[in-house]
View 1 (spheres, rainbow, N blue to C red):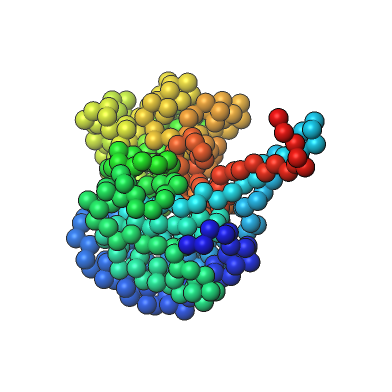
View 2 (tube, helix red, strand yellow):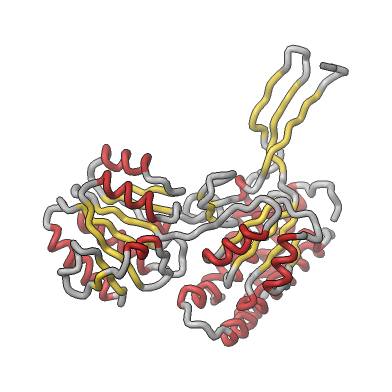
Amino acid sequence: MNSIQLSIIERNAVLQSMATLVDQHRDELIHVNQKDLKNYSGDDKAMYDRLKVDQSKIEGMILSLQQLADQADPLGVERFTFEHDNGMKIANKTASFGTVLIIYESRPDVTIEAAGIAFKSGNKILLKGGKESLHSNLAIVALWHKALSENQITTKWVEYLNYDRQKTQLFLEKPTQKVDLIVPRGGEKLIDFVKTHATCPVIVSGRGNNFVYVHKDADNTIAIDNIINGKTDKISACNAVDKVLIDKNLPNKEDFIHKLIAALKIHDVEILGDRSITQYPDIKPIDSDTVWYDEFLDYKIVIGETEDEIEAISKINTYCGGHSAAIITKNQSTADTFMSSVDCAAVYHNASTRFTDGFQLGLGGELAISTDKLHQRGPIGLQHLVTNKWYIHGDGQTR
């Protein structure tokens, strides 16, 4: 691949071509996806939901590409300038990583979004999707290659690695080409596999296991709406809610819990509870405190009681995945304390954790949602898939 960086005009032209091609081939993509759906023999509802491509997902793919094409160039952005006493002019500017490998499960839309963000930010992308979505992914990559070729650009910018587990492990340990960054996007087993074998930097797109804390000054209606949305809107999402903590001093607490149970049962959510909650109907006692660590990706939730916000913060920081957490309260001071103290990539006050998403937070999509703190936390958008370099201009200075 030519090492000279493509211009922003060239990169945007490919993205616009790809948006047009996806629109023109939407029926073909849905038809190909049916092969993957028919071949999928598992009973994981979240996996199936992520695997499925329908008209709504196609629209999302097209919108992602169009928004990326409309965004400013993330490369060459000046972050710092300094003029040395000796006259040298110094600047620090954003730069591409080089080659990014993303390893992901099930989601064909990642083949659009990840490649689009990587390409716009000047990176070559290596895509390693799961076997369950192979037909869909190969069809999308074929469109990427067509979009690149239409613009007289080498197809090496977007490459699909059709590897089994053994070959993937070998590539991670001894890459056959230079890889500058790896992003595993999937379950904990996938993440552990990549971290164990990778020989270059890894950004973890980790588990959810998100909490909602209902403070004693909560608006009960907002609390119930928030929990139901977070739990049932999309169970396959890493920003879904799995745990609810209720302040023991919540006024009309019993009435609130009964209403919450009724609302969850409408959606056939299995409800587990700690000792303080199990006296209510339709709640199963938890078997072990280890359940507080679990990400469900299913119609399942755990409800517990806390003494106050201090205990709630401590429990969230102990068990959560570092993804998202919300507090429901009318007390701004308590909300501020909660949001500054909870160790998550995204913290919410009276709003649903379902908004932890590149589109929803104004980034125009994301490569992944990082639960690491280096080098980017939360949604990794176009602006974040860059590193930096120093530019020093002189006229003969020596030290």
